[in-house]
Amino acid sequence: MVFARRNGADVNEPVRIEPPLVRLWRPVFPPGTLRSIILHWTAGDYVTTFPAYHFCLTGSSEVHVHTTADLQANMRDVTKVPEPPYVAHTAGRNSYAAGIAVCAMRGATPQNFGDAPLTAEQIEALCVVAAAVARYYDIAIGRIRTHAEAALADNYFGAGSADLRWDLARLEPASGALSPEEVTVAGDVLRARIAELS
Image 1 (cartoon, rainbow, N blue to C red):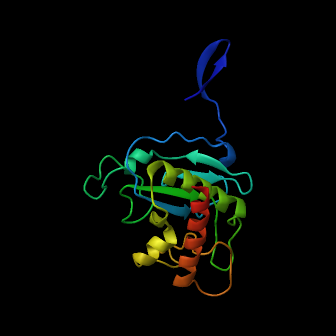
Image 2: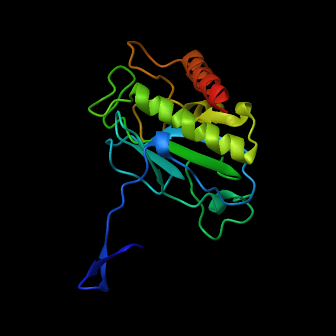
Image 3: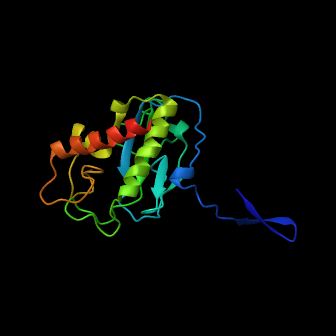
């Protein structure tokens, strides 16, 4: 923790240090093994971060990277060794997996992305961070998924219920119901950009 100095003495008043913009982000990753990355949104505003993900990306145009949890917490089979606590970002898929989330999509539906809609700058930042994690841990592009893709595979995909997930099933609002085909297309678009950045 960084402390302020008053009259030459340290005091217990934390100084807020702004996290780096994505373009200035120079991560220092811990050693270990990661095998997959799951891409999320927080379903919140543009500024609130959550420790349910390893990285949270705040801001709608100038995007900042926040390290919100230790990657090493998930560098194991968490089903066999659940203690100490790990980052539970995706049901049944947290072992050796990093979770990266864009802070956005509060009040969103597939047809209306709410008062904190996903932006092009956030999507690009998400791809930049995912590419850096994938490059460092040698994660194949095919092992990067959206939460919607994981939910589709594990039968909890959809919108309108707290038990369902559709993170990044659509990259912009559209009329009509969500479809499995959209999930794949959105995931492929993100993976293609991540591959370009890797």
